[in-house]
Length: 281
Image (cartoon, rainbow, N blue to C red; front, side, top):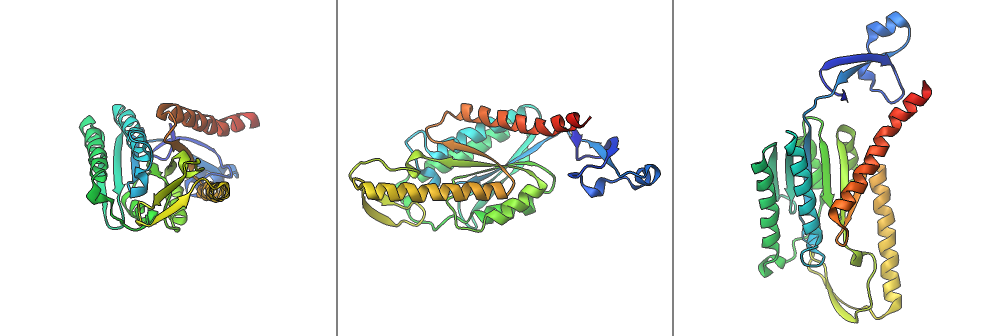
């Protein structure tokens, strides 16, 4: 694998996307054409999971909530990484000032410890005493702490439902400038459209605010769907501007099918630069 590293692999002509810091000035002066150094990529990969464990992630049917999808996703990928000797770490974000960091390691016991923390956190959320309001999620705190924590280039999975106060867009874009960042967005179909189920109480899990609504009203359901669609459009635009890949995991999706589709798309995209380079020759 060629990329960032310490062992020189090759020299080639400069291209528009290349880092100017890799220009070999001696060769450039000798050949009168800018050339860059290409290094052998470090084969050991470090993956970090930035995990939003705020109360809104508890939403969804029992056994298939957004938190269950999060736990399944982390368990599958963490095991895949560590089986090949790569390291995984995690930052568990349950609110401002309540982050927990699990250092990057490569053992099976380390993966089990991470899953134990996630499932223990989930069990604690099910207790009635834990259902009190905790304030809105501030995702930018998680991203800003990650910038200071991640020293070497890593693959970063930000797993969240992105129901957060604004301000996370800029630190996410800054993180993506140094690392390969994937935004894993958790959602439930009821967050996009409401069925006609009569009079119901709705409760914001993060602020505790309660509202009595009549879902029999077609006008209310249409307004709800319109506002949800506007939020979807804005969220996807913000993620695209940040320059990150996005995987959407819905509570009614098959986890492995969603992951396979996403990995196939990333494989196609990563092959495109090589195809373009070959076409020039």
